[in-house]
Image 1 (cartoon, one colour):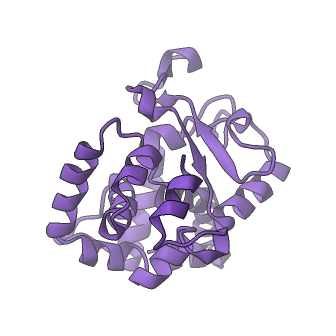
Image 2: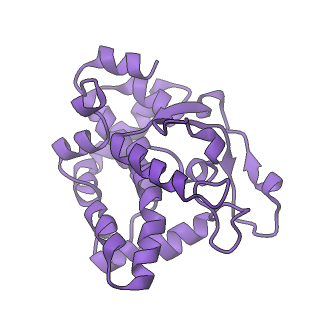
Length: 231
């Protein structure tokens, strides 16, 4: 699905190309950070580091009611752990830098109709994410498109398999490691391998693309270096 999302950025179909260019940064953000969609859509440029190598999750957004003002749809994270710094994989960092040059809004992902407002969850889900899966026939076991939250589960399952439970909790905003274990060990037992392979790449490519290998200056298999990175 990642290959499909990337390929459509260069489609000869203008409408498909425009939507893909809008969605691909969101797809990468969710895939390579494990962020919630409500956190992703709440990102403003003041949350991004100057070098675009990290960002700070400070707020979440609820875009279900289009009649509400910006102040009425923005909330603090549910827990203290939800407010966190996230380091970005090189590919995502570079893409964010490119977006920063041509930005037209204070939001990383503004509404196409009103750049003063963030993009809505409904738009991402129904106009970008689900149609992409349907066009490329990447569907769940029930024959229906995967939910956006599957990208978060996918990211979490990779870290659980590597044994980085404590770091997983920090990265994904969980207050307790026990919750992470319960949540993601169950996900793996219920078919995490199949879902990861369909939504992402091979295990080796997944680790490399997530910025969890040597290209980011530390080893995916070295818990000490990992803990220092996310301390």
